[in-house]
Length: 110
Image 1 (cartoon, rainbow, N blue to C red):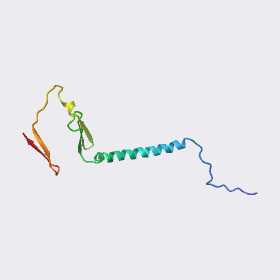
Image 2: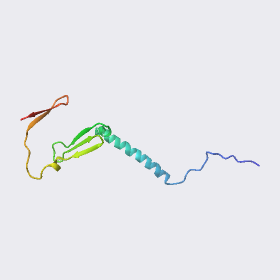
Image 3: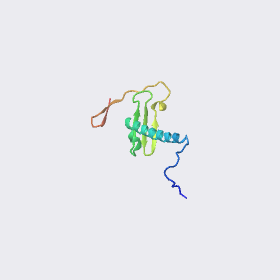
Image 4: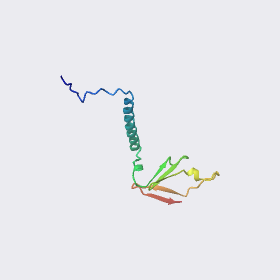
C-alpha cells in the first residue's frame, strides 16, 4: 500500500465573503487615523498633545470670538459674548497694545 503525503501548505482558501470586508475596515481605520494626524499637523495644533499650558484665540476681534485655554489637564472655553450684559452698552478705548518683534507686548494707556 502506498501512503499519500499530506501537504500542510495546500489548504483550501477561506471562502468566507466577509473576510474581505474585515480587511477593508482595518485599512479604513488606519487611513482615518493618518488623516486626523495630518490635519492636526497642517493646522499647527500639535500643542494639543503636549503637557504645556497654552491659550488659543479663535476669530479674534469678531462677534464669534472664542478663547480656549489649557491649564494642566483642564481645557476652558471662554466666549466673551456670553459674559457680557445683555444691554446695548459699549466699552471705551483705554489704550493701545503693541507686539514687538521678539514677541513682547507693550500696553500704552491713553
